[in-house]
Image 1 (cartoon, chains in turn red, purple):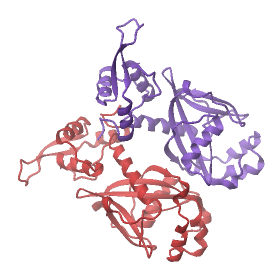
Image 2 (tube, rainbow over the protein chains, first blue to last red; image 1 turned 135 degrees about the horizontal axis):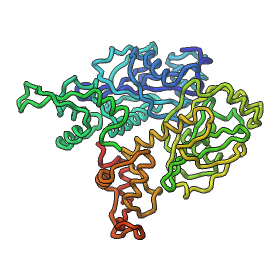
Image 3 (cartoon, each protein chain N blue to C red; image 1 turned 90 degrees about the horizontal axis):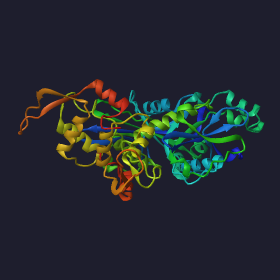
Image 4 (cartoon, rainbow over the protein chains, first blue to last red; image 1 turned 90 degrees about the vertical axis):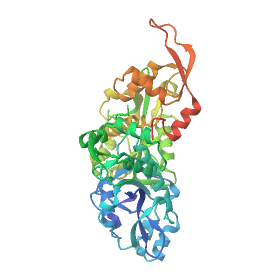
Length: 247
Length: 247
């Protein structure tokens, strides 16, 4: 634990790292030693650092993971989000020194960040000294979490679903060449709902971010499906300026 | 100025109230006495209040305006957003008491909120004791602003433009019955660009939030255009669950 006099009082950051792998959506969580509960990778903000910069530093310190672009998505500012017994629990389980108890008892607001990554491409996460493990857990089966961390995950997921209406996803989450059903499966996983095959195809092509290759995915029982790849320039333009479907 | 020991340290809120009136987009600003610079209505957060609640309280205290739904949109957390001379300027111009100088000198992060209103329907804003006026200024001609307030307005406007891709606007901004060109003018004003008339009509109708009435707007030189109104139930469903065009 750092010297708290160098930290911005009452402020923390929490990172919701969504992992996409084999058509499952998971969240990177730390299991706190002895307490049994799980937590998002989070931490405090140095007085001399930008909040956005500190989100990346916190993620690195707690999980070893670097170079992920974190999207700031919400400030959680309810008075009652820090429970009175949270500091006592940390102390009783030997996770903090008694001199830090009052620091953990103050009112905290927290800034939520999220990222969506192909988790097989991420370096193996390493838990920090107060955590017994750092693992990817399916969002549909989350265990007991500390504070309002479940609510933070729900809000991050809602934000990600909305973002799909004006931003493309898929680059770095799918193989370089992929079929339309593979792309659809990614959307269905994030949106947690089935989509109509024809509408999906029509809409996705209307975004004009895909290149149809002359290759086909071989090996299935059905007619071999066409492979697509992203037009990286147009993909980037869509990230910056919105999808063609937008205003 | 309130007793600062009751306030959450290093935290403020700022409100970007966009007004739509006669096809112009304006922002509600306060002109600070003596300093000459303009500022967004902003203020501090009581330790015992939710941040979202305090945003409404701040707006009321500084402008007299109540009952506006504020959307939280971004946390501004750069170290250098509070300039060292800001507290001195406030003090030199007699806007704060010297006992509050150190409060204003600390590092502040600020939470941005925005709303879009028909400003003719808003009660006349009243400036607070440290402001000489409270006025609607066109976003295209903003004067010199304090701190990073210009950047906060730009980010709020960008957010509003993105929101148009998954949320409807228009209810409470247009008369109860309106023509398609009037609705298009609202979108063009917010988006700051011209839209194709046919595409606009096709897309807007595809959202299925409009009811075509049997009435026409009379009095123009051209063929009298059809009047529409929002289907309030479907409009509300689109606010909650996204537009039909979405995933």
